[in-house]
Length: 184
Image 1 (cartoon, rainbow, N blue to C red):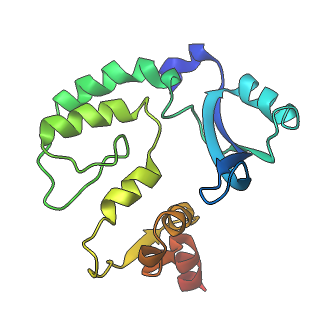
Image 2 (cartoon, rainbow, N blue to C red):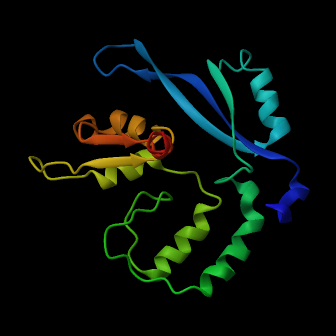
């Protein structure tokens, strides 16, 4: 990150805005759904959005504890150096299904992996689309057990919104809590 300090302090934040979605069953009526949007950018711009939340109808804003504006165009200077490093690394086709969060699809071969890892630096993370791909099943096929390991349960929350049946097989494991319990 030090190489890109000329951009100024970067950060990421999230805003929650009401998203109006037309009701399919009625004429002209709308229903409101909450929409959480993550933004990456220059810290001053994100602070402006936070300070003017009411003006832009944000219901909630929050700065995220990260060191850069990852998955945004501000990371463009990192693309070429990453591509060069990836050329020097042997990458093999995965032995099991590994999905890219750039397009939500399975990695096919080493060239495909290199291309999408580089693209991932400047592309938004498509968690919802990836979840749909991972849990796509023929009707009647059981969903696998899913474990989210680490702090937070963001992926579980997304899975619950995307696929309630798959979410029923979801478990969260907070590795830090387990370590602390073992020390006692």
